Image 1 (cartoon, rainbow, N blue to C red):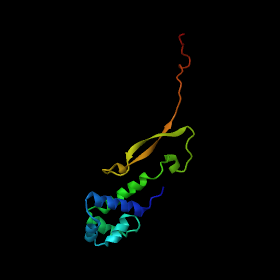
Image 2 (image 1 turned 90 degrees about the horizontal axis):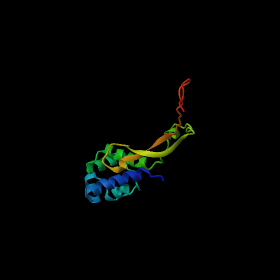
Image 3 (image 1 turned 120 degrees about the vertical axis):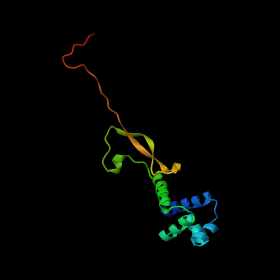
Length: 139
């Protein structure tokens, strides 16, 4: 499933506005953006310019860098989990398999959306212990 950048930005802007219990009209006035255009941006139908995003973020008292970090984290969480070997385009060793993953912070934040699954490779090794050469084994 592919999520467009404008949709992810719109979702985060709407979340910030509704968390503050503010109306579209109030934010559009403060940001000096038309109410209809702000609504289209929040619904992911319009691509906002960097100037417009900066104005909306300022109206929401939300740093632009924080918005972009959260959007990147949201989009990263939707990417398929791949093994590190696949990322470097090398074939995986035959005995390695993807058995489980661990949660690691993608970007430091307060939301669970800031966590993503990182694969853990498991290598199975079998060993046997034999007595040293020349040792006497008691029966």
